[in-house]
Length: 346
Ligand SMILES: *Cc1c(COP(=O)(O)O)cnc(C)c1O
Image (cartoon, rainbow, N blue to C red; front, side, top):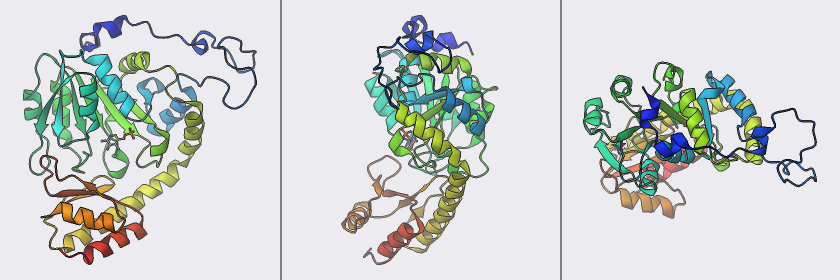
């Protein structure tokens, strides 16, 4: 793919802000009088590393991809927004996305004045590459896929995703926020060398238990990562976050164990939901939540709220009519939820 063809001309021409830390690349021991910082040393008086070198090194080891294939943002929200700002000309270009899917793609498109073309999944939430591809035209710059998909919880069929990646001349975003909860799935981060038009999104907000720090990752070709870095705020990841994330990334084995527990709890919840005859449908989940379909979701939702259990009501979303999305909690929380549902007057 000839990448320049898909980048907004103003972004190609953009000379990024050059930080003091870009200009001096030497070691730590020096007198820094170059950034108008306070000279009174504390753990926060210096600007953070704009390139997040230590973290990208660590992530490179954990993920098995090169450091220059990793972009780091303030949550996944930042790479999503930057993808629009890099590739899509406001009020001219469009993007295609599946429906239902994660709401942020559409909000970010609206903020950037980009037309959204939605392609419905089928009733089983399966993806049709043909339908997605036929929604594109010469101004389609990106296709957003989410796998496992939120709120439908299922992994998208790999063959269909690959068909899209191979046939589409433009960026294919594959959001893998829930990748840690699908055993046996091969992440697209390992195929970046074959697919230079793919941007994989991952996050520390779900399996890693760090939603509060706001840390999202985009994995792509070095060329794409370079251009995204050019557009981000220079110091988008603050020092507190960088320090904390470096510590947390040492907990990989513990996180893997927690994921196994969540997957076991998901299985239990699914089986228990299936025993409740008033639940019309319990959708298969490859994520850390379960989607159920019932006759009167608002009534159950309100009952749970009254009992201080909050789930996500997805009833108003197309193809999710009647659906509640329930995050897998701790064993204790799940038992409490099931108790409430079993004593509910359907
Ligand atoms: C939760 C979620 C994210 C994570 O967003 P952050 O901004 O990284 O917290 C990304 N994509 C999807 C589909 C999600 O459900």
